[in-house]
Length: 135
Image (tube, rainbow, N blue to C red; front, top):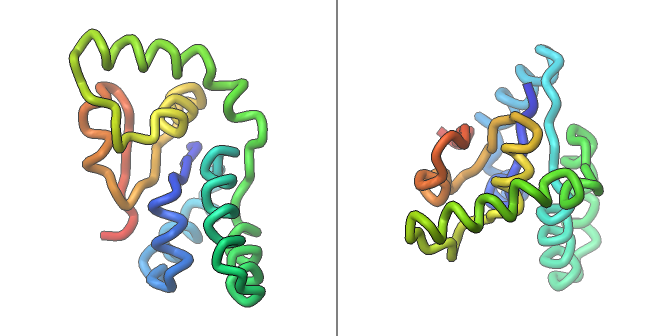
């Protein structure tokens, strides 16, 4: 299985509340599942981290990222699905603000499960599998 992490989940881990998440990550890795961070999420997290100017935080994040694959081709992979998703949302008259459409499209393109601490944001996207590992 492919699990795609959005920025809300990474921030949750970074803030030091990962006990239950560590168990889920360990279980997924033992099962041979793939844990992925798309490039757009990685960019968001790194930009935020650099603004904080904390070498300790950067080290902490580097340690966390050892467990993940970072897909720098994520936008190329999900480009067509992203466009279809935008059209579908407009057709359904769903306001896309607050939804990380790039990560949702990437998850759909990979046939994976989106792992988010903000699962409710993706509820309106039919067929997208979303799990909240904070519970």
